[in-house]
Length: 159
Image (cartoon, rainbow, N blue to C red; front, top):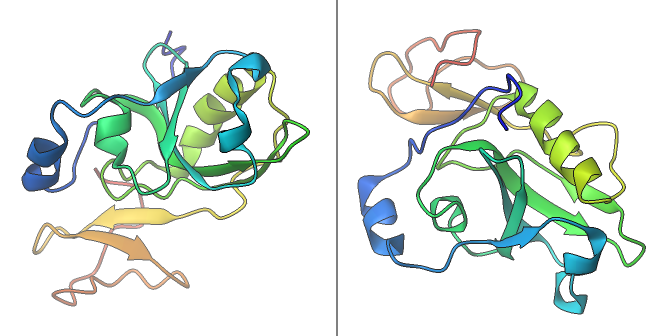
């Protein structure tokens, strides 16, 4: 069900992946009826699996656990309002570092589940891997310089 969407593999720390092995995966949200009272008005961790299904877990959950260690089409945090609309959504996942183009797969999963969507990520995060030291970076204010070693970061997504 990847529909030509880019897929993202886990690029975070190996010890986090190991620590979450065997953790319960995120709960699938296939329709609005799968949204529980506990899901409302609280930030949740989410992933979109390769099957195109949205999965959610409590906010402090690791994305790799939510995805059961699998590759994803999108990952971040979201908040669902009581009317079933998504009021906040990001691509903030330092485990998967999804590119901004992941919005298309995320939006498709939200629509498939019957959730109202904003026009895009309400807080978009730009990720780049440093070609010098290999560190994952969050780019702020278009400053394409590694926060660890000071090397120039590429202008295009590179995970």
